[in-house]
Image (cartoon, one colour):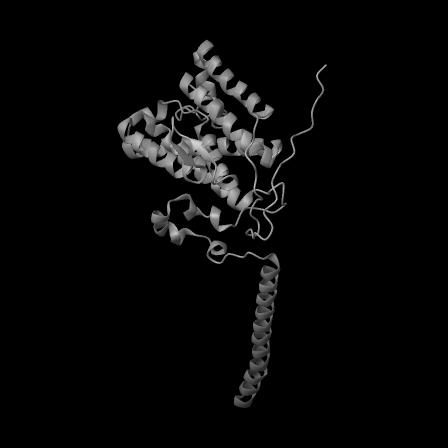
Length: 309
């Protein structure tokens, strides 16, 4: 009988002595060396979904998002992310899951890794449905209502954002001899997909899911994810701000979208606490002064009115 093994613990490397990390930023991690059991199990799901479509083509109506049938088949927005309609898509998604997951899951742990996949796939499914409906009302083309939408590419786009956060300088192979650092992969994929949308019109169905997968994953990692290693929520570091997703030459265009905490980075939690306490004291003093002024003005007004009577 096979013995069960405990969940894989998150792993990280300690920062070099004397190095300063932004408050809330996840510790440095090392690239994984082996494919995880979780990723292998999800690959079985992806390949199994493709095989199911080949054996029962009609099951696509109940597993993929078909905007005209999504109501009442509401569950399709949650299942579509795990259904690949073509063999190249099933193979590509499986390889992307294995190679990205071996670096991400050891840093997050199995529970957080699965939570991320379910969250991104679900939100991408909802946004894909809304986008298809919007395109139908704008263009009037019924093809947007009847084209089945599915695939794991939204989650793969989210993995690229996660790799940018965890291993920004990791070199990812693109072809035989060309490699690109993980921190530039989200921008490269968006540009490439946008160009392909003009060259191959049918590929436009993938673009909204890719973009939404990247943006939703960035929002989650930036503001909501509780890091299992530090216990802190989100990642306020400048290296993971929204403008950092773009090359330096393009950051001027999105500088205004930077949140307040990014414009005023805080590297020391003690200084942040003191700054917050000083702000509270100043606010209390102002409120006390205003209350005192109102108290003095009230008797004067009352006395003036009595004199006139």
